[in-house]
Image (tube, rainbow, N blue to C red; front, side, top):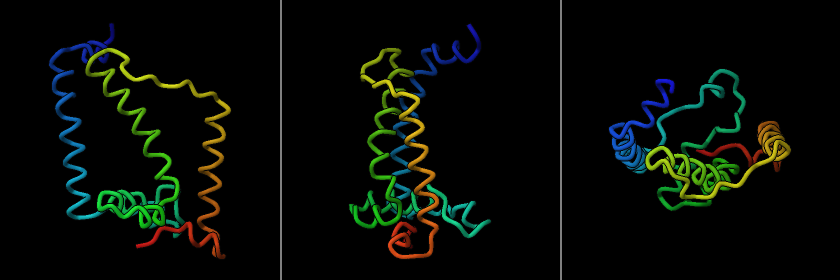
Length: 141
């Protein structure tokens, strides 16, 4: 058994991880609620173009404040991604803490991964086009 597996099997690690992750998430939600997103996009700062993740922090802050429309305007792909990514990370969290698969995770084919990557790349290109209606994909402030 390698050192990482020993650490993950350690009862102390599982208890600390089980407590720390919800506390960190609650702190992050509180910070976004109180202060908004303080992190500028490094890619946008360097190139002037929007990456697929531009506006995600502002979108999460808008969601926490209950403004779904503003969240959608900041990053269109975030809203469908939240339940999928949240489901996956919650399943992984439960497995690390309890060492049991409490939540079913569907198998995803390689073709589906390629389709998701194609959607993300297409979104990246389209949100940087300077013509209407593509300008609606750019994040708002």
